[in-house]
Every structure is written in structure tokens, then in C-alpha cells.
Length: 377
Image (cartoon, rainbow, N blue to C red):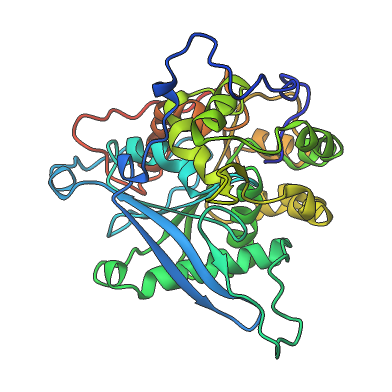
């Protein structure tokens, strides 16, 4: 995934041997199944002239008995904030992961969030990631179906198509959400912002949350990405070895998060001689990197919804965001001692920040034992 902010901890050093245990019980590196955190896994079938395929998605929602006992919260919007009317049905929290990650990146945070406010979380695997698969090209293909198109427009259209499929499914049509909260990490933050800004979202956008990506510093960090990708191991002999590398290299600081999410970064190459390699070759998407982030600050500020920027550290905001923050156009929240995958490193803390944000803007009802925290860095 593209690192949003420069001048933090340096890119991970050369990884230690993936097979050495350093005295740690190897059982703690066993992968965790998606069912540990999510309620459901399914596929959204997308059919467009430029894309057809099956997109894997995961669902986690507040238990009905907890939702029935949820307290109504009359907390006013923060000074300078945008207060939206209460959502009549639980909001759809639509989660977009960063480059190289997968929908499983949101597992631990989603499980925590639905235990604090009444909501439904959906995360999906962006094209080329996780278990999402685009159809093979047919001999009659006219060239419009490009499975290597990682442009911002293509990725945004995919997100909108998945949302449309969800709304047409039986699970959602019975109790359709009246709005959506878009939350994106890194590359996913750029997609969420463009989806909210472009008008392509099939639901009213109640809120937009961007995690650990700022246009100016993201553009500056692109030059170091090629070296970082080349420094990673090219293969792993087992999922346990891969999870160990993920944790020991600092890619993800929370071991439980790494155990559930990191297998989604990988694919099994040959069952007869098992070893794992990266699910997507991120270097092959390099031509699209600058397009993901160009103009992101302006679009973020112009989205007419409650907004929050959640960062692992702030070295500098660009001029547009600095002025926007001074004018109270968005909330900024810092989570220190986090890596780039903020929501994986500290899922409980991020869930608390998000839940408080949703309650403050009257977008979700707090569960009886959750007490929203005031905004602050």
C-alpha cells in the first residue's frame, strides 16, 4: 500500500528470514479465519461494458438484541461541523482498503465498531486483490474490458457497482440504508473521496472518512514505493511464515490483525509445491499511482458531508487542507504510535473514534454501554 506521510518511521528494513522462529511459538502465527470477525462472506456479480466479474465482500453488523437496546443519542454536532439528519435505518459503513491489502484489512475494526454503535459494515476486495476475480477476456472482446485498468475511474466505478449489487440483494432490500458512510485507507481513501465527490455513489453520502493519506505527502512518497516493493520477500513457504514477516517487519503491528488480514495479500502458486506470493504485483499499477491522489484535497473539502481525516502522524498538511481545517470543514484525529495500517494496528481505538464521530453527527445510535469521546488530536 502507498504510504501516505513521509518523514515517519523509515520503510521496513530487509525482512528477517521468514523461516526463523526466534524462540516464538509458531502457533501464534497461524492464520485466523474470516468468520472470527465477520458474519458473512459473499460475492457481488458486476456486469458493465468495461468490466465483468465477481467481487468478494464481507459483512459485519450489530446484533439485533443489542440494536434493540441502543440508546438514542442527542449529542449535538461539534462546532463548525456538519450535522446530518438521523439515519432512519442503521447506516451502511462501506470500507475501502489500501493497495495490496484486502477487505480482511477491516476485520478487527469492524467487529469492534458494531459493538459500539448500531451499524452494518461492508468491506470488499478491490479488483486484483483478495478473492475478487474479473472474467477472462473473450476472443470477441473489443479492448474495453481491461483487467489491468487500475485507474481511479475504474476503481470508483467498481465500488459503485458493488454498492448497487448490495442494494439489490435480499439482505439489503428488506431494510435498505438511507445513506452510506464511506471510509477509505490509503488508495481506498482516494477511491472513497472520488466516489463521494463524483456523484457516482448510489446512496446519499452521510460522511467521508479518510485514513492515513494526504495528497501532497502521498505524491511525494510515490518515488520511494518502487524500492519498498522490491525490498519485500518475493515468496513465503507458508502462511505462518508470511504472517510472521508481516508482524516482525512492522507492516502490521497488531498480531491478531495480521493473522486474519495478511493471508488476503497472498496467493498459492502451485498446490503441488506449495509456496505463497503476492496476490497483486503493485509495481504493475505504477502508471496509475499519481492519478489516485491528484486533486484529492480539493475533492475531499468539497464533499458536502461530515468529514474526518484520521492520521498516524502529521508532518504537514498541504495548504488546502490546512485552511480547511482552520475553517472547521473537517475533523482531524491523530493516532500516534501507529504504522500506515492505522485501523489494523489499533482497531479498538479507531473504532472508538469512528463510533464517536458517527454519534456526534447523529448518523448512528450508540449502544447502551458506549460513551462517545469528544473530538481531539
